[in-house]
Amino acid sequence: MRTFKLKLIYPKWQKLKGQTTFNLPPHGPVAFAATLPEWVDVTFTDENVEAIDFEEECDGVALSMMLSTQVKRGWEIADEYHKRGKLVMAGGISTMLHAEDMVKHVDCVFLGESEGRMEEVMQDWVNGKLRKFYNYMGNMPPIESVGPCRRDLYKRELYNHKGVQMVDLFHASRGCRFSCYPCAVSYLGGRKFRPRPIDKVVEDMAAIDNNRLFIVDNSLAQNKEWEKELFTAIAPLKKKWISHTIEDDPEVLDLAAKAGAWYVYQAVYDTSDYIKERVKRYHDYGIGVEGTILLGLDNQTEDDIKRLIDFLGEIDLDLAEFTVMTPFPHTKGYDDLLRQGRIFDFDWNHYNAGQVVFQPKHMSPERLQELYDYAWKSFYADESQEQKMFRLFCNVALREMNEGTYRPRDRRLANKSFGRDVDRTVRNVNL
Amino acid sequence: MKVSPDYYDEIFQFMGEWDMPSACGLKIRKAKGKTYVIVTELYQDNPGTSVTYAGRKLAEQICDAKGMKLEDITYIECNPNTNSKLSFYDEEFFEVDFGSQERPQYRQLDREEIMKFAQK
Image 1 (cartoon, rainbow over the protein chains, first blue to last red):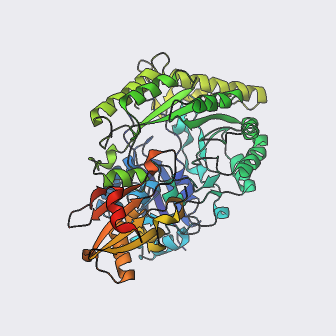
Image 2: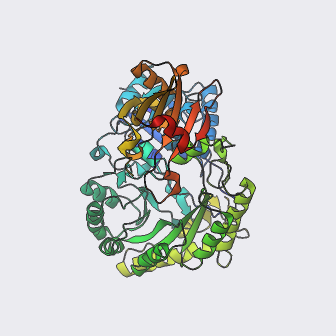
Image 3: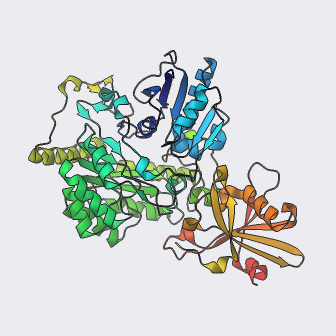
């Protein structure tokens, strides 16, 4: 069989104002690429770090999209390729969330997880029988079939800031047993926690040419025994990693720290002693904490939000990330706000978690927007986001030096930031 | 986040968005010559599409299965109380008018209105 040349694209999106931008190597496209048959010759362009060459020779185009803010750009890209007579397939998280819209703009919509499915799809494509839909929603492939990502497709120098390599994204499980109000993961990946076999995780992780990872699983705190087994198994790799929540259990936290936990994203949803102690317990084990603070929930008044922002100063967070409630389709938040007639903006480019697209319960949208801006400014008033990140970076570098795993920065890229020349006179924000 | 069986008489299996196998709680009541269909979101026990997102598609499947016509029923969505600490999971009822508009119209009902016809 002849080779099919597939151009895989990760569309760009507008970054949030005023925030330090770090472009991480995207996970979805290379996880998808790993499921393609061997006879598919795939090239990858991440439009966030390089321009798309629309004239590059290819037999077809695949769009991999994670964010709602990518979908409209994806449609523009599809239009460009349609002008050139190319068929375009779309898949990924935001394709699933916005499939009704997506189908109007691309030739093929792939819904679900692609392991074990792509031989059929690509055969259809080669034979001129590409279908409008390949629907595997709710029909998950065996978790054992999830293999290593095609990280060889990354142009590594583009994910480098002043000589420092960005973390690689990694997943140890899929699905989520929780049904959190603003989250669509259980719709996308199923309501069952599906941990990958530990030996596969270790093998996959060990093969990544990067000592710093971001384990992107929705929450590791879903099965304590698996979590303990996982941390014990990956400890010898001496990787350092970021993750979402870890089980609030001394034994698990100890194992996590020994396994290389660098810092975690921890939701800070109220001003309780529980939150304060939760953050302290992470710190007690040498694990940093980036607080994730969602603003604009129905149980938050203006005073509540201000109190929450003040509270952050008391709990010694290493970093904080603020978002405004955003009713992404297929979340309970979307259902509730839709029924109540409170969503006033359905422009997916505005669904960036930094722009208010709904009527808050206790204030105007404008006031919530102001409080969101105030939260960012307030938290980083004394020390910028970059400075705080640098402190976290120093922590991990010191640990690596002690363990003999530290890799000095790549001096050849010292004047480059994500493929662009560093302008030393301007702060590196909003690239 | 288990939903109390008090909210439904049966679990109704339906094909959700993109034919995803989905489930909701279902109660059908007749009162004063009207047929009330109450669908309840099951959260973790619904493997697919939410009742709100499924909307008209779910209503039509219930009508087909139960030999009813959509225009003859009063269709009500229920957010059950799950005894969560979060207020988002408090009990709520909405009457849904699928009408002719792009999106359905919702009217929130209070519990007293529901109790008039929801009791067996």
